[in-house]
Amino acid sequence: MKQLKNYINGQLVAPVAGQYIDNYNPATGEVFSLIPDSDEQDVELAVQAAQAAFPEWAKTPAEKRGQMLMRIADLIDQHHDRLAEAESVDNGKPLKLAKTVDIPRASSNMRFYGTAIQHFASEAHYMEGTEAINYTIRHPHGVAGCISPWNLPLYLFTWKIAPALAAGNCVVAKPSEVTPMTAYLLSELCQEAGLPAGVLNIVHGYGHKVGAAMVAHPKVPVISFTGGTATGRSIAATVAPMFKKLSLELGGKNPNIIFADCDFNNALHTSIHSSFANQGQICLCGSRIFIERPLYDKFRDAFVEKVKAMSVGDPLEDSTKQGAVVSEQHMQKVLSYIALAKEEGGTILTGGQQVQVEGRCAKGWFIAPTVIEGLPYNCRTNTEEIFGPVVTLTPFDTEEEVIQYANCTDYGLSATIWTQNLPRAHHVAHQVHSGIIWINTWLLRDLRTPFGGMKNSGVGREGGFEALRFFTEPQNVCVKL
Ligand code: NAD
Image (cartoon, rainbow, N blue to C red):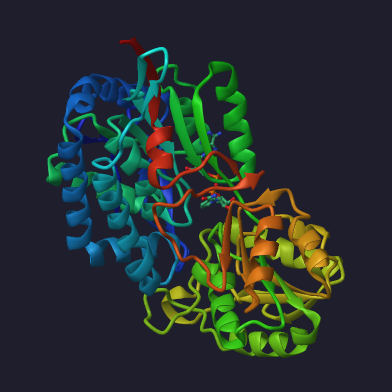
């Protein structure tokens, strides 16, 4: 059985304590590899390696750092099929999705920041009258800690480490212990690319051990975290008295608002994706669908018909639309929310149960895509993050009403609005408290834009120059002429 290793100081090494965690294939329910169960000793070694590599990496010209990221991007592309299969096996997502979304986006992230750093300029402010000039230098921080979740493993891992490295930091990174495989394969690619030892270190293991040790480490002054809101809250509590710089990308409970004048086919087709892509395990999925009353019955019937036709099964099969959810524990959590929806008075229109797949995947963790109606807009099912293939349908009558529905949760990550009335689209967009709004589309991403959530969905923004600003410390120098 494959035993993964940590990547520390340019070497693939076993965890100091020699302990391992079982890694499951969610589609078969079987253990297929072992992950280092690292602890603070491994984190210490990684931080020391990153500190030692920092002076040289920080003074490497941005163009050269960028070229190194591009070399890694090229290697990700060359190993596209192998990485996509590893991602699908580790996470349960359809191989097709890993091939078309996860892995291409991972190399795009590296390429985007490999070039962005060459266009990243600092400011100068000339003071008329007093004849002085201020210029701002942006220094890398030193060792950056990057912690990522399981839903888009390599995609979100690279989304953090690329800007951190491009800006001249050395990195200690921790992928999710639930989906470590592609981060491990990336460490092999970094060796092949000739990334200097210690510039990137990848430590595998549990959040409460490895993640907590990174967050509390006094020599890691900057933490970028993507994951659940409860974890983000505990990280914030640790780092606040240490005055660390912190970026938090957290959970969501996103509204998908459909007005009666929308382009029906487009709204219908895209809403299937925005509800169930990656088994609904994307922080940006629209899990609360609000439909203007005159369109409600037509949309509901067409939507449910399409959901019923979605094939659930072996993620490696080309025809599969819904793969496995990521773990047995997560499956139980999602099923418990479906039970809660029934208690709260919801009607299950389709789905609502575990799916038993035949053959190779007989012991896998599959859930039928589930559509629920008849729930109050502010019940627990409609306000808590489920993060699975479950959506609710709710009718509305007025703009004011749907804005109230959209804003009634503690989350504020993204929202989607479907209407052909553009003034209304803008008006509603400006009233909805979400960091990212899509009008007549979903998940259309321009990597230059600020990405992040309001309220309990996060603190700070990633993407574009925002991330390069986050991973650098500005210093103003004032010169009297
Ligand atoms: P999680 O919070 O359980 O884990 C995320 C990462 O944090 C993992 O690597 C985990 O090991 C680590 N971790 C856990 N406890 C820790 C601790 N005490 N200290 C430091 N690190 C710790 O989240 P998850 O279940 O892996 O991911 C799902 C969540 O992530 C959902 O809430 C989803 O909405 C969110 N998410 C948000 C975004 C975004 O961009 N806003 C993107 C993807 C996922």
